[in-house]
Image (cartoon, rainbow, N blue to C red; front, top):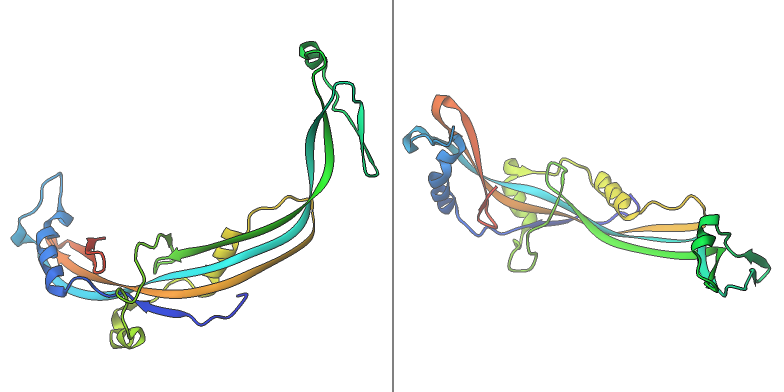
Length: 234
């Protein structure tokens, strides 16, 4: 990792209670066992357990900076009677035309000159990547402010340690993916390359999720998950 940072720990506040989740689950539980567009009877589906989990979303943000020279061709137009141009110590002839091009060229049309030059390039790319607790890249749909986060995140996680789902990817692996995302492919003819990666922030954002284990017809098992922040079935 380019730079060691203290990892921020954030826990989002629930917007629904367990009783609210139970009502939603009772209403939606038969949909998990629908077969050929037919749902089982409500009494044939039982809620075995309902637990609140805190699932980690890992966010990494940073900036990639590069400074280098690269070869480039710049084409300019010159008058029809110009055969070459002199630029510094270089002499650049006009672009040759094929027989077909000459046949369709309008009299006194412009000639083209290709200048083989070098460009001095400076790149600065800044962005953020977000991973769910399985390590899959995803979007971050939540707002982070004083009203949406818990005041004592570490204490809350420690009190619910058995129900905390830590990230399955490492911080270093997430940072390497961010580096690869920010660093665009370069031309092979590059010289005097200086580059730097600045890691700005690593954060573990824990999302409260109600998860119900359901038992349906023929003892089939189903899971119904509710995002307790957005009040949304996952």
